[in-house]
Structures are given as C-alpha cells and as structure tokens.
Length: 456
Image 1 (cartoon, rainbow, N blue to C red):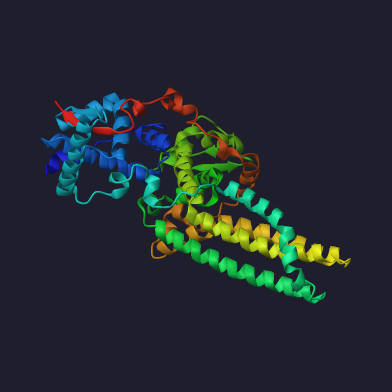
Image 2 (cartoon, rainbow, N blue to C red; image 1 turned 180 degrees about the vertical axis):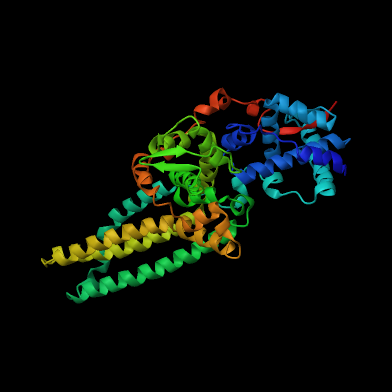
C-alpha cells in the first residue's frame, strides 16, 4: 500500500470551510443520509479512488460509493484536484446492462473486493453490500402503513361489535351490577399492564436487532433528539441554548444578542452564529424560522425521518401496534356488549356507559403511548445505558439528549416558538441558501447503476 498517497487522499477535503450547502451537506440532503453515514460513504469513496488509481485492473464501486462519485463529478474543480493528487484521471464508465458488460463489471467488483481487503480490510456491508442504507436494518416492509392499519381496525371494530355482543350475552347476563363494573375495571387494568410489558419487551428486542447497524449506532446526539421527538424545534432549542450557556448569545428581554461571534467546532452552532451576525437584536421566533430552513438542519431532519419511516412501516413494528389495537378493541367490546345487552333487556346502562367512555379514553392514551414508546423510552434508555460509563456531562449534545433542560432565561422565549412553529417540520426544500444548487444533478445521467472506472 502506498501510505503517502493514501494519506493525501484521506486528508483531501471535499468541503469548503463554512460552506452552508457544501458537498457533504448536499450529498446527505439529496439522499436522506445521516451525518455519520455520509461521512463513512465519503471515506469509502476515497478508498475506492485509491484502488482505481493504483490498480492496473478495472475496479467497480458499490451503489452507495457510486452515488458519492456522481456527486463529486458535479464539483468539477474539486474532482480535478483529487485526480491531480491521484496523478491519474479516473473516468466514470456507465453500464450498458448487456450480458458482456454485466460479466465484465461483475469481474471488476470481485477484483475491487480483493484489492480492498488487501489494502483496507473487510468492506463495511452498509456501504458495499446494500444499495439502500435502510436495507441494512433488515426490517421487513409491511404492505400497509400505520394510518391504513387504524382505518382497518376501526372498520373491524364497528362491524364486529354486534356479533361479539351476541356471543358474550349468555355470560354477561349472569353477572349482576355492580360486580360487573368492578370485574371489568380490574380486567382492563390487568390486561393493560400485561400489554405494556409485552410492548416493552418487544420494543427492546426490536432496538437490540437494529442498534448495532451503522446508521443507528452512530446517530449523533442531535439526530437522536429528532429521532425521539420527531420535531426539529427541539434540536434548534438545544443548539441555541448551549450558545446561551456558553455566553456567546445573551438574552435581552424577549430578544437575543450575539456577544461572541467566534466560530466553534460545531456546524449547527456556527450556522446560528452566522445568521445572528447580521442582526443586533433578533426575536427568537424570527431566528428560529431562519434556522429551521437552513440546509444543515433540514438535512438532519431528512436523514433521521427516513430511518423513522422505515421502522414505522416495518412488519416488526406494526405487529406491536396490531396486538395493541386487538387487545384494546376486545376490552372495549366487552363494555359495548354490556351496553347492548342492557338496552335489549331494558336495564339501566348509565354507569356502564360512563365507565366504557372513560376506559375508551384511557385506551386511546395508552395507544398513543405504545406508538411512541419505541422512540421516547426504548431508544433513550438504550443509548443512556451505552453512555453510562462515559463522561457525558462534558459533551453538551449528549447531556441535552439524555437529560434535556434549558436555561431559565431562555425558557420564556421557547414556549411561544413551540406554539408558533409546531408544524414547521413539515417544511421541505434546501432553504434560501441552497440556491440553484438544489436543482438537478447527474444522478440519472449514467443510468441507475455504474459499471466501473478506467484511467488515462
């Protein structure tokens, strides 16, 4: 291995300093990748380019590496600079998908794997095996989503209410009031308790299955904040709050004042600082709106949303929801059956109607808890255990994710921001700073896949 050449390639920076929509951010944004996955994909691309430059045989990238390659080709000056370091112009050769080409590129992939292992060790499967990062989670995609499942359940609940009441009637007429009410409440409480134990165990098992995957295990603390809350507001609150705590921003009445414009080693903080340089005093609501549309924050949102959607639409997660809906549906049908039986027999039903309504409200509350349990509880506790032996107090991002908390002077400004921008996460696009760079790229110019490369 040519150590000197590899060090030059590895240290080659594809991003320009303080570029808000540079190579990495654009690559992550357009492909809905997380920060670490993007960083890893770029590193693997550099390894591939090293192999292309030093090998006399044809080498071929993975689908993920090819995406990075396509992106880099757009940045013509940067690509030329890299080829200068390689002392070789690496040409992109698209596949024509005919049989002869297929065999040639298949051989090139085998050569690439052999050379890679010889120089760098085992190829990370998330980059070299799977064409889509989400496939590395190895979750089965369900035939329908959570919204459709709720509609199916509601329809089944309505259609089956009367048949179930007829089925239960012989049993229900044997139980007098007020014993039925007490039995019913006790049964509801017991089954709900057992259900939550099932949910906890199943969620733990699901997270244990996917946590070791690269895109999950390397989520940044701020990505985990969004992963948990599904709201970009909390990420923004945390970033601004840390700048206040470090005395870079001062709270003046209901406005913020930048008192130290020195950039930090945190790209999100630097984005906020660059915005605030243009203002003497700025209300947090206005600052919040400017921040949330910036590409770097939108990229975080898109990358993590993709993971959430993959989990929420998986058979493994929807199985938990199915069990929850069936259990609460059957429990509530007992109450409805009692009401129908009482009406048919001319009995007083006021108490059981009230009890059933209360239990229905409780059921809905627990259903919402089950839907969010994986993200609010399982994810949090899982990463908290992993960080139990580290000094997280010195890392504000981990401290914010694990323990939360905002400064007292900042809290009054956050509350109206939450109310006014609750739906701000629905915003999409690259933001005003993206400019025309958010337009089309050469992604489709070489077809859906790439064959390999050659050199001059």
